[in-house]
Image 1 (cartoon, rainbow, N blue to C red):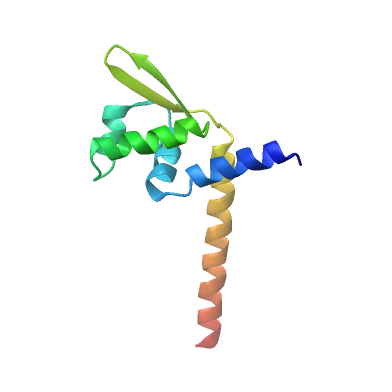
Image 2 (tube, helix red, strand yellow):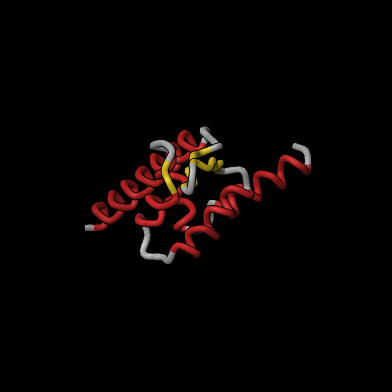
Length: 106
């Protein structure tokens, strides 16, 4: 793997490494949203949300488009849905295994 590819992957994973940014990306899997709607999802102020959106945009995870006074965001990395589904399955499997181990001890 080239150094460039590795660095780009690191940048993307770092951008997704914050709970708010990961939640934004996962919600955008459902479709494009206005920044005003995204801001309502979290108890953070709008400035903080804008900074999170900038990190995701700069990493290439999301894209934006302006429509009048509103900015709409959408997921640029459509493959993120498959990764998220894969991770959900692995985490559920891990949790079930942990529960089985607890049951086996009883």
